[in-house]
Length: 534
Image 1 (cartoon, helix red, strand yellow):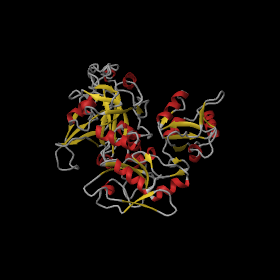
Image 2 (cartoon, one colour):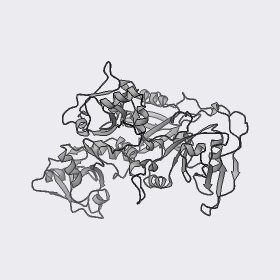
Image 3 (tube, one colour):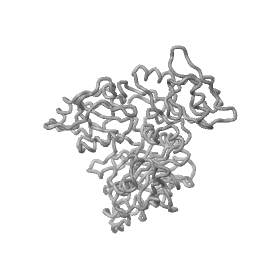
C-alpha cells in the first residue's frame, strides 16, 4: 500500500552573516521541531519551507526524536548550506495519529530532487580556480561588457594556466583571494593580481550560473562554490582505534592557528589511514574544530568511541584554502554529494536507483546454513569480491550480490588486506557480520576521482538489513560477545572469472560448535593526546 506521507527535501544556502530565514521551535502541546516565522524572500521561503512544517532530517540525520538543542546544533554546524527533510503539518499529525514510522519514510527513495532556495534539480555553482603563474603569465585577459556589472575573463589560452585551473571564456570574476571584486574596475583588479604574487585564487561564474543567481537575487560567495577544480585536495581519513589508541599526538599551535597531527607511530591506525606529520585537523566526524581548544578536540575523540572520521589538510592545501578564504569542509560536503554523480550506464532507465552508485552497508545474521555466499579474490591482486550468493540466504536478504567488491568487514577497511586475513576476520565475526560493499562501476568511479570509499558516501541511503532485528549500523563490533563460527572451507576456483588464479572461500559452512573468541584488547576509553600545549 502506497504511503500518503510525502516528505520534501530542501537545500538551503546562505551567505556569511545571513540567517536561513526561519525559526525552529518546539511548542507545548505539539510534537516535533516546528518551522515558524518564515522570512519573506529568505533562503527558507525560496526553497519552499512553510510555517508549521516539521523537520524530520538535517543533512540525512533523523532528528524527530532528538533533543531540540541537538537539532539546532546540527543546523549551526552545517555552515553555509544545509539539507532539510520536512513534512507539512497536516501530514505530520496524521502520521503520528496512525503510527506511521517517519524514520522509515525518511529513508525511502526520494521522489524528487532536492530543492535549493526554490528550484528543483541540479543547481549551477560558481567555481574556485587556483592559478599559479607560468612562464607566459596566467593565460587570460580581462574585459568588460557594456551594461553588465563586473569584469570577465576572456581570450583564455586553451593550454595556459587559467584554462588548466578550470577558467572558461566569459566567466565573470566574483572574488579574488576571497575579496569581492564585482565593483572593481580593470586597473584595480590588475593591481590585485600583481599584488598576489605568483599565485591567485579566483571565484568565477559561467553565464548559466550567473543568470540563475541574478534571477534569484542571490549574492555569490566562496562558500557556495564547487572545489572540484582546486588542485590540492583535503583528505578524509577513517580511523579505527587499536590496542594502543590511534597512534598519533595532537598539538595545538597558536602561532599557526590550528590543531596539528604529530609523532605518528609506524603501523598505527593513523599511519595506515595516511595521516602525515603536521597535517592540520579540520574536522572530526564533520564537526569543525578550528574554534575549539585542545581539550575540547580530545573530548570529541573520546565521544567517537573506537572509530572516527577526520578531515585533514597538508600545508600546501591549507595555504590554498586560506588564500581562497573558504573552509576545507567544502570538499567534504562535495564528496558527500558526489555519489549522485557516479557514472551511470548510458542506457540507465528511470527505475534504476542512485543507491547502486554508492557503497551499501549489509548486515548479515548467520543461520544454520551459514552466511550464504563465497568470497573470491584474484591471486596477486589486492581486494576481494562476492560470488555465488545463495537465493534466500542471509547474504541475499542483506543485499549482497555477485561481484560486489568488499570494502569493509565489521568496520575495518580490507581493501589492502590479504585474502586469508579477510576470511579470518569473517570467521571471527560470530553470528553477525557487517560488510560495506560497492558495485564495480561505482568502485572504479571513486578510485578514478581519488575519493576514499567509506560509510560517509552512503549519505541517507537505506542500510541493507536482515529480517531479524539487526545491530545498529554504526555500533562498534564486539567480537568477544559472539562465539567463533565453524571453520571456513576452501572452494575450488570458479572457471568464469579471469584466467588469473582465484582464491575462494565458501561462506556457507556446516554448523559446528567452536570455542568462544578471545576478548578484544581494545579499550573504548583510550586515546593518545598531548596534554600540554606547546
